[in-house]
Length: 425
Ligand SMILES: [Zn+2]
Image (cartoon, rainbow, N blue to C red; front, side):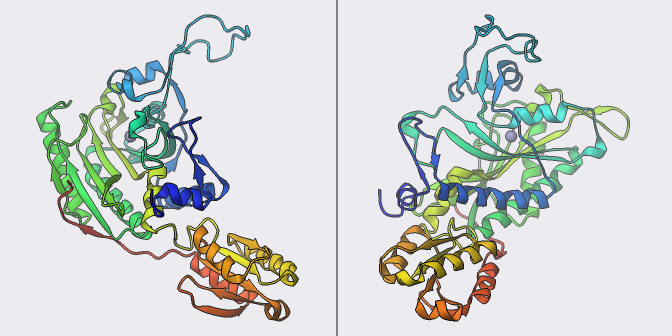
């Protein structure tokens, strides 16, 4: 493993660790969880602005749900199942409201879709409720073979930024175009200027009629074009239940990772007998669009850490400012500066070790902290700090001015990535 492998960065920067106690699942450390929450909050803000309602569905669900969705059979080897029996519980507790329906045969969810189907079906839906956009940061578990595990890139536990849009047939094209725009905006703000988009079409084993597939593939292609994309055709690569658009990023090893996806599903609405009441008063089947913006947050963080070689942009860095006391006499002043920066909404940490400033700056780079605020004898007297920017430039500012300058850096740049056309081998 080299210095820029995300597992090396994670260890050096105290972000997360792996342990044989839970192969394929990260233990998140304080700095890593801060990063994780920032990324999650960033996606959440985009989803909210795009009209999604966030929900949370259960982690462990009865076999009957997985049978309805088809996963119990089709995804058997990928699910962690919990076998149960119907024997009375040893603790003798009974009569709770679970009794009637609990089969005691359960599985950890490998995806959130079936839970969202239940939420949609929990009440009568009108055409006026559509498009209904539901989102979840779902903690999913998949029983990947141990040989396939690769740090955060491929694990057994991951957080999928899963979303489902239930819509009428004439709303599909507009919704897919919106989703493509959302994914491109998010990737652009995260520093990915180039993204390869693939259109995966009908596989040999599939459900649905040819007419359904013609229509679904045509809709995805047209919506992608309306979003300014020119997808590479990936014949036969679609899911058995529908075609999909895939947003593919390359890591610095040149490996390609599927991140965002948009899929039209011709299977689940039928299996769950989903319906809405149309303007004509009749029941109609909604079209289901699944999509993920980043895919797995864990995998995306790995790509992000490697892409930026551990030096994340200011707004995302777990610690944004290291306040360095130059000598023992400035310890108190350094603490005061740190408290002031934290009060201004910045993530600041203090370094009062008896080390040289050069050492503290070097350590801040190693930890991925973008800015150092040095407090020496003069700064302590004047009420200033010397900011050292990532490019090495230095600037002496009054504390309030420094806080304001740093706050301004938390505003993210907005730009749109350039879709790249090439073979998605
Ligand atoms: Zn889904």
